[in-house]
Image 1 (cartoon, protein in one colour):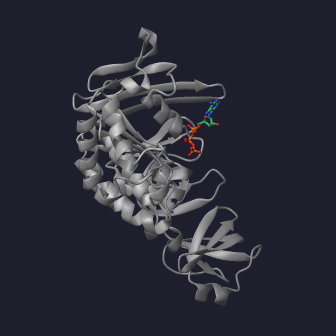
Image 2 (cartoon, rainbow, N blue to C red; image 1 turned 30 degrees about the vertical axis):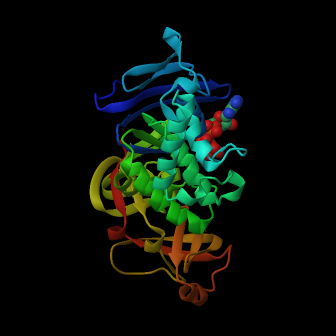
Image 3 (cartoon, rainbow, N blue to C red; image 1 turned 180 degrees about the horizontal axis):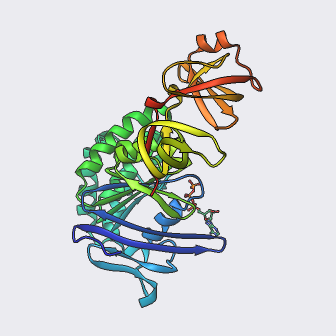
Length: 357
Ligand SMILES: Nc1ncnc2c1ncn2[C@@H]1O[C@H](COP(=O)(O)OP(=O)(O)OP(=O)(O)O)[C@@H](O)[C@H]1O
């Protein structure tokens, strides 16, 4: 795949690790923020390490601003320290014996900047991050959120063509995370280079990135902007991320036949392979078979009951594996217990069908 001229990063990352193969194409434009999202073991860290030069490619190429950094077929490999790339690792990896200022000055120094100039630049970055009063502190005397900002300042201080962030908010507690996410959004917006965020947190991906690339088992399964990916998930993993029930089947007009034989009625007319998605809140539960408007009804078995926000999430087995969200009052009325048989219903108008091809 060739990249458009506007692409800062144009990469075909092929890495073989014995039993695991990663093979993905990634392009990121200057100023664009792309999130690489996927479940544990999908290959996100491997991709990030390959881009940073910490893991050699077995094939493909990495080009940044037109320069080839890696091309195993042409015997090109650029060592990590020679890449115009800034990395914020998951656990920040600040030098414990250096002050915040010297941590940030380290990168520019290594790129050949004079000491006084590098320290002045570091001070400006820390000031920009709201850390002017912490310049002299060692990492162990910084909070998690402050250390994260120092790490970001350190990565940005070398004016990288590509900024790589590995689970940038994972080490923070829930409250700090919200504030830091908003700040990070602001700083990424100002960064003129390309940014790639590796995360398994869909909220981080959707709040911080312009474009999502979802990988599973070493390959891209879906990509697009957050709105498209969340509206039309194409795998169970993505459907779960965005909180939807998802099925694939064969449509004949509004009837979709699932592999087990169950027929789902949808509001849209299609033919051929389609996905059908609906949110757990669209599923209602009843002691007796419900009658009425065009709806899907089936007898299900309760396999699990969990709290979900203010509601209860009920896991259902049977002809469809489904999640249903109901209020605690409704649950009490139905005396729900695992193993119990119950009727489930979803209106055709609450389902969303879209082509699978
Ligand atoms: N050095 C290695 N040798 C062999 N296999 C490896 C090596 N490092 C990682 N793997 C395997 O490669 C696959 C991808 O791992 P990777 O760490 O890239 O996934 P990830 O998407 O970052 O997962 P997580 O979200 O858990 O960090 C996994 O199956 C892992 O076990």
